[in-house]
Image (cartoon, rainbow, N blue to C red; front, side, top):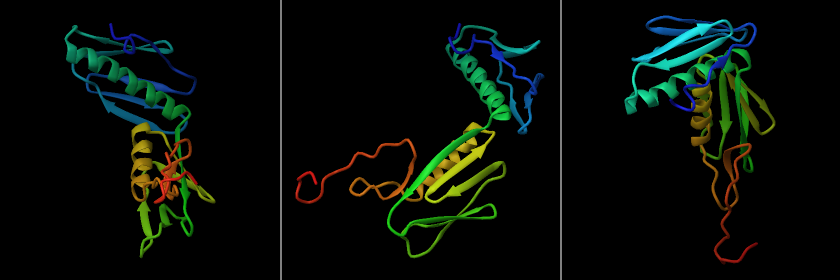
Length: 179
């Protein structure tokens, strides 16, 4: 048995899960998410638990077993609590402003960079920290990675966009001495 796949998923109050042959739907106070059911994986909803089982012990099916369980667990957490990523903008003259559903960023280029937030994602800007929130874990992580890739932090002064908990390894300058 897969170590992750065999664990039952507890369903919190206010969350409903429906599983049929083709799709698994999870709805809660923050919204609704839907994913396709993987082949040869069975999803059973009992009382306040979800149990994921597989038909056989082939290597590929074992991997899908754990994957399906993780995806359902992330959906349950997303519709009940939500997911959040925080990015920090460092640099002289680097600014971020929220205008509607767009992030307007001044990142040292000759032009402002405008990032359109996808549907289901909200952002808040507090000075130089961007907080990205949503119910879909994959989409929140993807948006945060795309925003970070607009101006990755450089190793000399640390200018750029980085995750709040990320540590940037610094290099010394030309002289080779630690400053």
